[in-house]
Length: 359
Image 1 (cartoon, helix red, strand yellow):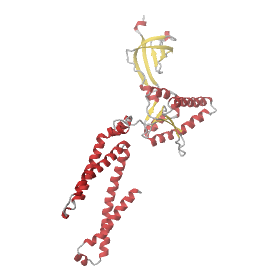
Image 2: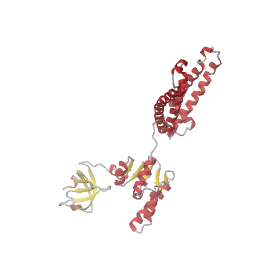
Image 3: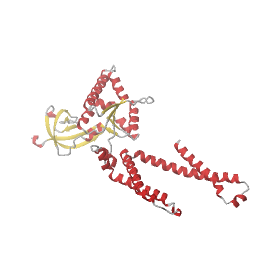
Image 4: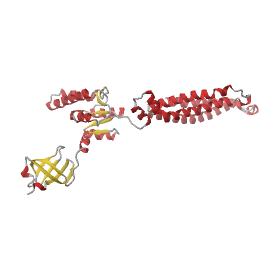
């Protein structure tokens, strides 16, 4: 609507100027025109076309300026506004004596020209000083707000809010991650996720009921431990049926990051350009890297498929297949890694008993 108003104003203004411009023609030229009113409307039409082009250019420039202002941090807008006001005040003080000087009538244009040029120059100077010393100015206003200063100058970017899904809460590892301090920003639990947890807790199925109650207990502990960071958000979407689709929409609207351990939800969110932090990916990345020749302690839990093989597991669930390990089933064994294999089911490590144990 605003774009239409801008273009319409330029069209009407240009058409009015074109209509009245006929009066600027010399009298003898006007006398030669047989239909002066038709000429007025023709010039008004041509002027309206020109006004449409100029209005369109102004509208595009306005939209670009509006987009830049929206992306600009509020601290930068504040400091530049203060710098602009100070520049204009300084221009009035500096240029006031000039207006008191007697100026001949032929040079009367000097005063308004000096006022315009001086105001523009001092305004630009004020904005430039605000960009250069805005950090110091903000420190004077709020000495403790170092974070807002760094955000204003672009050195620091604000942390995105994290949106938790139901499976991530029930999983429980998010509670330990919060305690370590590796997760930054606000933690948002939407109303529809809370309702899903309540539905699970009230389910007739024992397994679902246990999962729902576990999620509510974990959420309560996190809220008690981090009351300033855990926020229950009232957002809900009646037109969307599934909780996963609601989570993606919610994260899109607030420019947040989706925190989950659901593989399919991660893929869907990535396709819709929503940032995702997957707890399982984090756990996978934090697994120790074992190279051939490294020695580890492993408990042999069962026999392997091949003769004399024993099978054990590391703390992260990685399967270790040990040659000549069958006779050590049920006991701890120090082994040397010979190779590792990454499969779709996970990682497997192949090892043999340490040389000190081989007779």
